[in-house]
Length: 114
Image 1: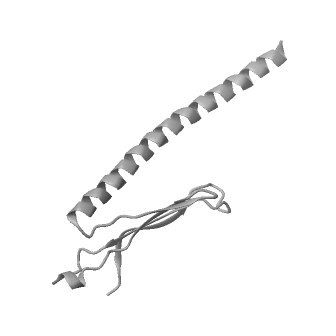
Image 2: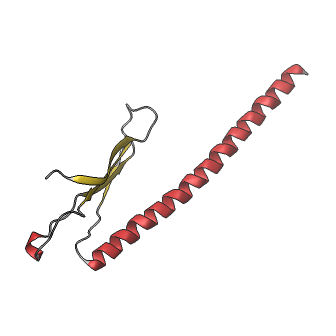
C-alpha cells in the first residue's frame, strides 16, 4: 500500500531559487492504518526542516503517547502563532520602508525642481 500524506511540500524560501533557504514539511496520513497491538505501532513520517542560507533546523514531533502528542501539538501551535506575529510585524515594517523611500524620492524630486 502506498503512503498518503496530509502535507508533502518542499519549497524554496527566497525568490532566487539558487539560494539555499528552504522548508520541507511532510506529515503522513495514517488514518487508514489498522493497529492490532503495540508491537505494530509505527511512527508516522513527520518532518519539518527549515533552512536559511547557512543554518538548518530539524524539528521533532512525537505522537507515540498522549503526553508526546500534547507536547507536539503545543510546539507546532506555538510556532505557528509566533511565525504569524513575525510575518505581521515584517509586513508593517516593509510598508514603513516603502513609505520612507517614496517620501525620500519625492523630497529629492521637489528639491531638484526648485
